[in-house]
Length: 219
Image: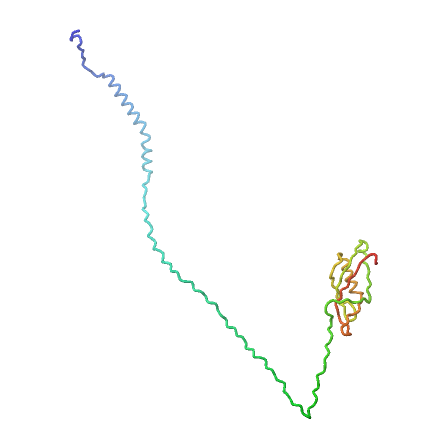
């Protein structure tokens, strides 16, 4: 093939005016629509910008430094000395002994009279608890105790005067029944008589231990 056949036919480039005009119209239309869409928002942007108030920044100064605390002075603890109260001890003089005067016997000396012997008075009450004989010891069984079949022994301590009459009665040991204890005390105090205690031939008061038996076979 010859070189003349490979030659390329070149044409001169001419712009398409119809296409350019269409593109220009489309760009203009889009710009107009964008401007029209942004027009209502322009006053709102202006109001937001005006409503924003400027922020005032206050610089806070740091507080002045505090002075250092004073030094702690440690003082030694003072011990309080005990107060000694003087005690005055009275002086006791030794007892003075008086020597009996010695007299030489003489012809005119009188005989020395001895002091009268004073017999001690017997005590008004006998010491301790004694046993006394009965002069009268009536005993009545309580009716309620008979109905309920109460039995027992009451041990009493009785103070007997010089005439043998009871002055006081104390329950020393219970019978186990309050009714029998009360009855024994009241009967001994009201109607019993004893032989009085005797010391050096004199009747004296004395405490005596008295048992009171409440037994149905004996009644």
